[in-house]
Image 1 (cartoon, rainbow, N blue to C red):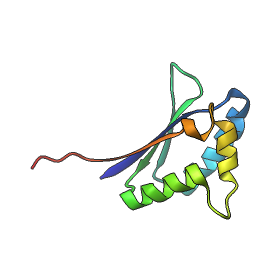
Image 2: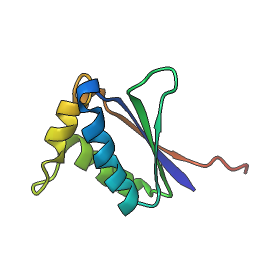
Image 3: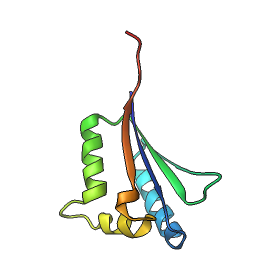
Image 4: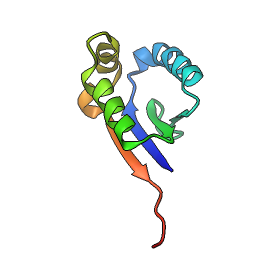
Length: 98
């Protein structure tokens, strides 16, 4: 089992647009969970379940650098406090005893 965590803060002016965008992602991706900080409004964490390391690398590339047919990178750059350099992603796998 593996999970990907994505963390960033969304600018208040783009909150509604962001939430609409992410609801569509959640409908398409059954393995995506979106959480918001309870003591820090606008701080979001995405939790992606059952993501291989290769899928993670693709997701990270698309989110941080975009694709030829994607304008999503510009949205993320504008929405995130501090731009894409403030978007953080990590891939984790379950620890098992040997």
